[in-house]
Structure formats: C-alpha cells, structure tokens
Image (tube, rainbow, N blue to C red; front, side):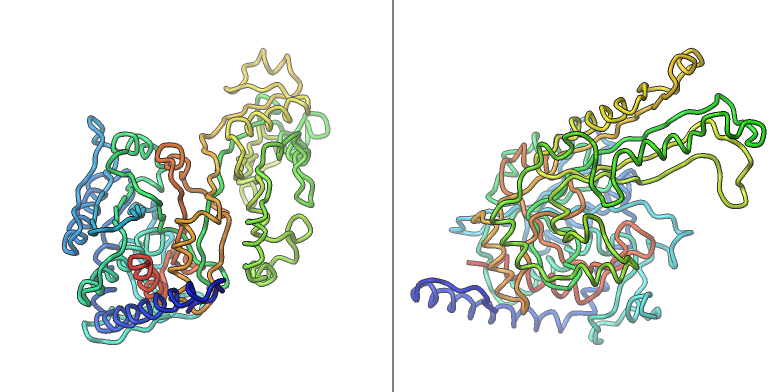
Length: 510
C-alpha cells in the first residue's frame, strides 16, 4: 500500500501503476508460498541442522556448499571465495544474477555462521530444529513438522541455533526467487550475494576479503539482511549500527586473601575500590562523567529527527515488558539513546557470593566494561578517555599484574586490558538508493515503514564503508523476541512470510 504523497499528478499516475504491478506480483508470490509452505520450512530445517560455528571449518564449509547448491538451482552463478594460505578462515559465498538492461546493482549480505551453543542450556538440542505451536513463553508445545501439502500457521515457531540470526533470510530469499521464476516475473536489479561465515566470531577477515575481491563486489547499495523487526511489529529499515569497544579493569588490595575479622577496617578492600571508581564514571541518571566522552559524537540531524517522528511511542511497553519503572536520562527515548556512546558494566567479580562466600578480603576486583559507539567516536580514543579518567582518580595504570615492588610504590593500581573494536557507521536517511528500498517495502506492507537511524547493536559495517565506499542499509525480518545469541533461539513462521513479501518487492522494484 502506498502511504507517502507525491507532489505532481504525473508522478502519482506513474506510482499508482507501479503499485498495481507490485500488488499483482505479490499476489502471485503469496499464492506460490501458500502452496509450498510445508516444503519451505522443511527445507529450512535441513539448513538449520548443519552446525555453523565459525571455528568449525568442516561444518561451516558444509553450510557454504549447501547455500551454493540452493542458489545455483535458482539460476545464480555461485562460487566459494577463500583467502590463499588461510584454510582456517571461513569462506565467503559469492553469487551473482545479472539482469539485462538493469541500471542498479544490489549487494545482498547475509551471515551464515551463528553463535556457539551449549546444549545443556537449551530445551532441545540447538542443532535439531524443533517446531512449536507458538512461543514457549506463551505456552507453546512441540509439534511435528508438517508434511507437504499440509497447512502452516504463521504463529508457529522454529527453535534452533541461527533460526533467526542469521539464517532466516535464506528461506525467504530462495522462496521469492522460486515464486518469481514460476510466474515469469523478471528481476529489476543486478543482484550480488555476499554470505559471510565469521560474523559472530568478529569478522576478523572480512576486510581482507573485501580488499582481495573488491572489483567483483562493486555495486550501488549494500543491503544487509540481519536483525529483528521493531518491537511494535512494524516494518523497519535501519541506516546504521553502533560501533563497539571495551576494556577490563582490575584493581588490587592485599597480595594474599586476608581474614576479614583480623584485617577488616584496616586493609583496603578491592571491591570497594572498584565500586568507587565505577561510580565516578557515571551518575545514577545515566550521565557519563568521563571528560569529553561525547566531544566527537556526530550531532543528530534534521533527517534523523524526522525519522524519530515516524517511530511508534513504544518505550513504555518495553519498560513494562522488562519490569522497569524507569530508564536512564529521565526516560529518554530508546532511539535517541542509540545516537550517543554508552558505558556499560558487563560484569563484576571479586571473591564469592552465596554459599561459597567466605570471610575474606579478596586480593583483587575486576570489571568488564563495554562501550557502544556513536557516529564520530573512534574506538581507541574512547578507550584513551576512560584511561585518562582512571588516572585522574589517582590510579597508576599497568598492563600486567603488578609485582610486589609496584604494589609498594602505588596506593591505587588498575590493570587495564583493552578490547578490540570498530567505529559506528550510518548512511544518510535521504540517500537515493536507500529510499528506493524504503519505497519498495512500503508498497507491500500495511504499516508505514519505520526509518531507524541506527541499530542499538553493532555490526562490522565499517569494513564495508571504508573499503567499498558505498551506502549500506539493514533490512531486518526476525521477530524481536527471538532469543538472539541465547538459548532457545527461534523464528516465528509469519516473519519468514513477511521476508518473502518484502524481498519480492525489493527484487522487482522499479
């Protein structure tokens, strides 16, 4: 359905014609899908049964070969890209569909690797996909996968590792291609496929791949198929991601554990030292007190503010779902928080708790600090700012555990171990190629598309921005409650159907 107004009547007539064509195409694709729903999810089950942890090269390669075979059946020219002399690096699956007279090339990105999974923490084996009548949280029960020709309910869910992150684009893409081919409907863009096998392992080698195969990967717009729809269920297009970095901070007390009765009230306590240091970094309201923490953060633009206005006011529902009375910065909008860097205590450790707690003063306390970065924040400079703040609190910073002489010389010592990281990336919302994708999705969805300036999470998009120098957008289809990265990861079947609809419109957009 068309929801945006156009200025001239001539353009309106043209757009109405396009919408009519898209509606007819969508009807044919949906009819095809409804005839083959059982086969679609059973085929997807086969893909999910292949373990896909990046370090498991035999199985990750098996995934790659499966994808090559499936896309070749749809007429794509496929190949496996590797880095010479590095057999331990997961391959890139590259493919191409050339369209006569097409004037636009889309590069579609999906990652086929997934997070490691410990079967002990799952209700079912993560590599044995299980179909449920609805979500476990809503009381769903395991059911058999349907036989060909049987009906499929959109509220069913498949539980299994990578069911939503990020194998779910594959059944939607393959089905869209099948349906279009059966109906003799041509694609309108040249399509290139870039399927990565190490995203969940940090994409350490993706930059090398992009440099080695840059000419092969040239195009107009990178379309990342990853992530969940908005919490409200409305369709969304995302124009960027936060960057990420972090560090681990260790502070020290006595060289050996001390009896808290004999030495309590006399020996410095590492947990208290660390608590005071962390409290100096951030107010309870959420304001970060580290000097110049936001100095290089890119300002919110007028286009960003217009995009904010398209978002549903959903924060109160999210707080209620999470059991939160309030959120930081006096209930600042969630999307606005994505536009600024964050400082998060990911973990704390000092001594023991519960039944294992002992009457001792521990020797050290450790905090794991995560930073999500906004546009303009350099990872190393942000780490520098945190270290400068630690020094300003009177700490001597070391990179290794201090020896006895160092302990005797400095009253307050902090070992800082830096994490790797990468910067944020954001494509302007008014980019012409990106807006074509927005309009294509808009044609086939009932609700207006949400324009999300940036995801809260992080992806290594900076490699693609710096090396390929082309705009990047993210088109998510998964349900927001998919347990991404966690036990019992799942995908709602209706979200696969949604993916088929919008991918169809993108593949055939004017």
